[in-house]
Length: 354
Image (cartoon, rainbow, N blue to C red; front, side):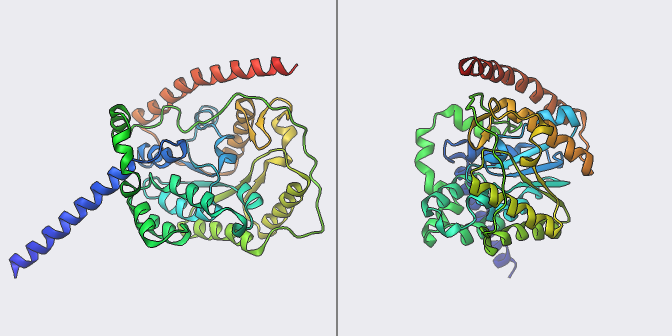
């Protein structure tokens, strides 16, 4: 009997080891896409050192500079944001995020609800690709499994491959050079602490938001927001819903105001930065790189305003030891050099537009 138990335990141990190896190999083989590094960068941060987790699409990561918020308001933040991120994934991202960090606040960006309110109208391949890129870097867990099962629109074989990405991306391990593989194995924190800004300028006109009598947002889309609030309540963590500014069309402006009305009616914590353009001193002629995103100049303004808003309205409790503080101080230094280059390029773009 004892030998049988030992044999069974040995088999379980071997299976667990293989499970771990397959999972880690898959993370090493993840695509060469900035969005696929999101989880690796998050896991690389020391446990329980992140105050605020920022979730969303490029409408989040193009607007937020974590080291600037740390420098100005003395709190830490991490971006779990990826291009075209499906708003339905936010509750799962929140659930995964708290496994390694004692999070005080989630900030969830909601432009996806305006752009992608009707999920059925979105190209399936786009939804699947955006999900693939995001989850390949995730640690194996029931959270990841449930996300894939619910939202990955493929057969069971493909779902298994995505759960163990080495089965999907094994060729990458042969194609990638050794330096990249070693760098991914080292799992060092991102040198810029998640910052992803650009310098290009596209002159725009400030939009005028007008309400419409027509109802654009479906109950289903609004339900996605309710699901996020429910998950935050379940985790016992506050959530701030956020809309970032861009050059909205007439219809998008009406949808935005409809969204504002819904969130305010529900009593959710919510900040629509489209309504505070003057307060941020945001200039549509110089502070955007395209119709949907701020450039480095705009991101600095949004970060300053939003960081102060968060600091003034939420209790943030992460305490860093000297080594952890140094990690952020080093990132400030690294980002300062990068930011200077971006601002120099931004100035050149500005001169071209004159």
